[in-house]
Length: 281
Image (tube, rainbow, N blue to C red; front, side):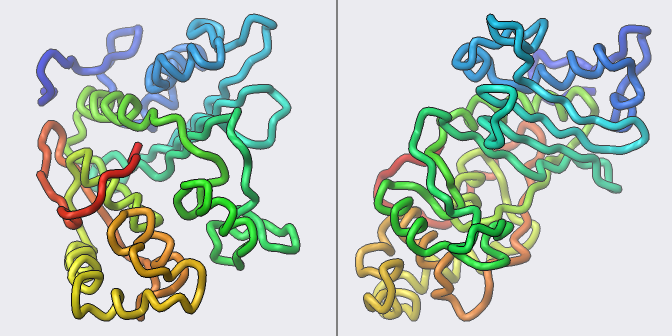
């Protein structure tokens, strides 16, 4: 039974109980899309003037794509401001795990009207796959100066706070007890803490990072102006720390940080309690 107050189990139109994404993916296309597009925040639909019934704008152009192949256990939601756009305004990917958990694999929300920074490609223009294949330092510097976090090509729409409760309710309706994710950056990990997540792996690292950015710490000493991403004072904000970590200030790579949230339970974790106030969507 669902754990969230007022929530109900999910059933198909024929009355069959649904308990997995693979089960939803076996449904007729329209029914499947209706269930999945319920995860889209209403403010996103209003912003792009998308009719939730047709998934089209007033010009009749479809702006929402639901990729949920029958026989597979994942769904990908893509929303564009124009059908031909390469960049997405909203992108989310969810999957079942073998332990009957819901994995929030990716979530990217961008403001289509904001300036774009080419941090997703190398200086030669090749895709860098979240900088695993190289960085674009000039663009990263421009993005950082504008207040963006690592890997952000545009500022966000501050919609995650509206999207995640829909995901948690959806997971609860399917009978999942846990949502899992893997934050790609330090700031993502802190952001997830605010929504009630704890750590499967990486809590010791997060506490160590906080300790080493304080007086006498190794990371604080390495904010030595050796690069523009290592400036004294960056230790006081999530954004500053995240850029320094992105720049390789730690002895180890940012990796193997995995998090979870039990449905309806806030872990109450805060591994950076004395941070300066800043926007964290």
